Amino acid sequence: MLELKHELKLGKTRDEKARMNFVSGLRAHVLNDLASGMRAVWESQGEPDFRRRTGRAPKDGPEVHKAIKPSEYFRFYSSLRVTAQDMVWQSVFPALDRGRDGLRKQAAALETRTGLGSLTLKPDLEVPRSVSAIDVHLMAGNYDGEYDEGDLTAGSLYDNGLAVFSFGLMGQNLDDIGQSIAGFIRAKYPQFKPKKILDLGCTIGHNTGPWKDHFPEAEVHGIDVAAPCLRYGHARAQAQGRDIHFHQMNAEALEFPDASFDVVFSSMFLHEVPRKGIEKILAEAHRVLKPGGLMIHMELPPNSQLSPYDAFYLDWDSAYNNEPFYKPFRDLKPADLCRHAGFKAAQYVQFVVPSVGWYGSEVLKEAASHQQDVDSDKTGRLTDGVLWYCFGAWK
Ligand SMILES: C[S@@+](CC[C@H](N)C(=O)[O-])C[C@H]1O[C@@H](n2cnc3c(N)ncnc32)[C@H](O)[C@@H]1O
Image (cartoon, rainbow, N blue to C red; front, side, top):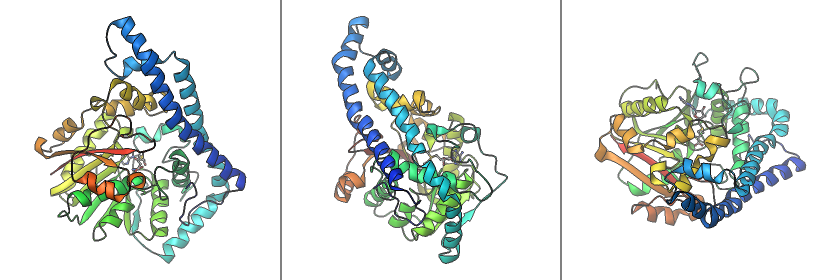
């Protein structure tokens, strides 16, 4: 599962593969076993202690965070999780250092061989500081870091690192989110036949491609500000035989005409954007959607729909994983965001979509026939049995 299946995969030694397997297993242990243990300790000791001291239950995530911080279990969990996160990227670097030039050659060969899709870069695009000034989730160089002209390294680091990070939960092509959401929309709205689909903050296009699989007649576009990820994403789509159009563009100021798309999608994108940017992005999504089109964002579930413990648990990344916009985003109410962007309140939608890789396509189709609730234990978190939360609106 950790070995990428497309032609851009890096050559790895046995030691490197063993290290990646180890790190992946360590992450699974932390996020499944230690996370369950930490919850059990909270429920049996932490929360009763809190009630004894204050005469009430904690009211939100920050109160749980403050109360649990001194506990040894929490400190051990956090320390191991930060270490494992750092090791994710470290485990990819040696193969990437050796493979950098090869990657560029492979991308050039794919361009002449398949010529599928397109790549439009804009070298003078100003990359927002929320991308250029931080190494989000401890990823050295972030999405936009380049060693030299034409570099694809950041894309390969993300692709290989995500495989280690997600310990199989994202599927063979790391596209479980895209496959699940696009499959769900197709099953839920069989009459809906989008002709143009846009993915915002697409990175390497791993969740863009599934839209082409589910809606082969549609023209599919992905935009991102990070050139090295887009170069890699374009080559990756070609290696997978997918016809996708990638553009270097800021989602806050889309260079597409009004009413030009039937679907505007994003996944795991908005929680990495400051609030002002999110508002502009949703307004832009509204502008470029055709009447009758659908905006749909796969995201982390909002704090307002979670218990205080689960809010604390998901906001861990903001405090310890270099994700400064994560909690501020999760404190917002998705329905309010959509309304401010110009969507009618009655057109708001929210879904909890079972991972197709974990549950299979029959469960996904069944889920499309009725409303799912946010399940605090599983929704939006990388754990066995993951459920993907999404919200949006029809225009
Ligand atoms: C967490 S990644 C998204 C991952 C991907 N969509 C997925 O499904 O896993 C966030 C991406 O958003 C991009 N990004 C951040 N701000 C952006 C903006 N204002 N416009 C376009 N892309 C942006 C980053 O470069 C990065 O590639």
